[in-house]
Amino acid sequence: MRPYIFVNLAMSADGKISTRERRQVKISGADDFKRVDNIKAGADGIMVGIGTVMADDPSLTVKSSELKATRRARGEDEHPLRVIVDSMARTPLDADILCKGEGRRVVAVSATAPAKRVEALREKAEVVVVGDEGIDLARLMHELAVRGVTRLMVEGGGTLIWGLFQAGLVDEMITYVGSVIIGGEDAPTPVDGKGFVSETEFPHLELTSVDRVDDGVLLHWRVKKETQ
Image 1 (cartoon, rainbow, N blue to C red):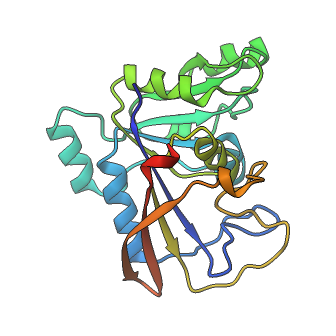
Image 2: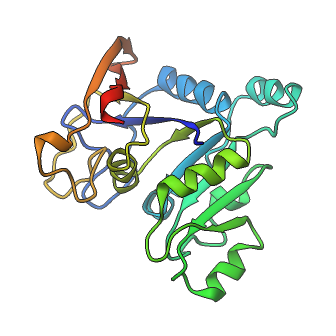
């Protein structure tokens, strides 16, 4: 039992999601921001890795008042359940994801996370231990499903996304390609991590739609079933 998992990201025309200093940059425009807010409002949960929290300090909140009202009318919190994958419990207690907007939060940690950090985080969020050293992503997905998450949006970063693909957990990938060049061999890409070695390991995607948005292009991919 696990949620339907879709990855949503924006990258430059040369395949980078931020600069080599991990500095957040604007890649898309107003129309894409509106699109992202809509799909965020339609999700039960939204997940990021600790690297994204440390670099970007996202709140992962729904911005539109109308969308928040629609969620309330459905009997839901204004914002989806926010999930941080953080094996060593490094999430700052004043991070926006923990402090901005009402709603539930889950921090996934490993059994090796420092006990004091875990206890401090429990004041801000539900902490679940899912793994001995790293995070067992399949187990985490089960825990989220138990908590009512049927549709999970993943916003990064590259290490988390690679881990999800490696575990065969991604169902859909939505990629906005913006009209900028970032460059840099050390600049992060949408899927980093250790990477796949053999072609037999590569997840294969089916392109389902292509749309022009702002000054870029939006690509919808479905992960082919035989790779799951």
